Length: 338
Image 1 (cartoon, helix red, strand yellow):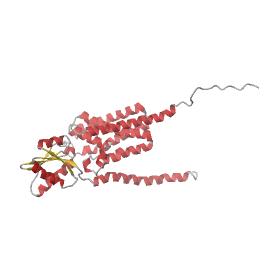
Image 2 (cartoon, rainbow, N blue to C red):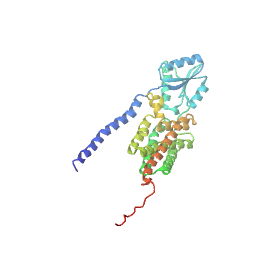
Image 3 (cartoon, rainbow, N blue to C red):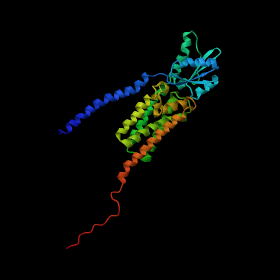
Image 4 (cartoon, helix red, strand yellow):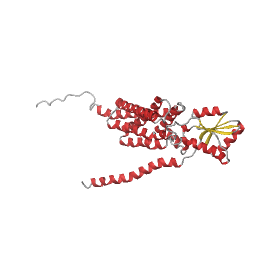
């Protein structure tokens, strides 16, 4: 080894030693900080019943400044409909015999527990109980919603694998797009078969669930393939941050986007894992209510990734196919003999 190459070789281990702690700190901050700051922030909640009594309940909830976003409804039927259409996470219904709480554990078991604590807690201290009705309950196969929350990371890894393999195999253009779409479709069908058919954790339309799962995998795979084709190896790192790291940590699937620090939940819903999780919850438990926005986000990411893949492929192939000369060739004549 020459004297010039020795310092360069020594810098590589040093770079690894410095990079690993930075990555570990970044991953820990990304996942631990939102979890440590979990609290309701403008959480949509309904209040129904006669105006005078409902005003008192609204004031009681409003004491936790910034925690709840209050929606008013005429009666229990209207509040129940709002929950089923994912307008609110739950509602307090004021009746002549006292308040009743409507929740939807399928919309987030952590939120349902938080509402029970906020509404039933004060009355429990007075020796009274508040009846609780779970309007949209989680299935018996997944009573705590653990399967739905744990499904995002495998989906992200499946999408990442499809994008990385597509690039490493050197696929371009229509072949690359067809590979990503086919892999996503198979992954969606497999995941739906496991979560819906085997575990019983999803209870909606099987094909709608498989479609959401496939679109989530496609969006993530297209991001990996598109960014890597445009940027080279750094594209893989950027895609991993957007999907595997920040996408999962900011998704809000462990609770709700409104429980994350301000702005983080919104960012998470604009990234594929968060949008995919919200869309899957909607089609599985709420007959598709609230799925339109998340499906649009997934479609935009998939289209952007495929467009980047096509653009990167053109940039790589055009220079190789360009002609080496322009204009007609002039024959070279031999000099006349003197």
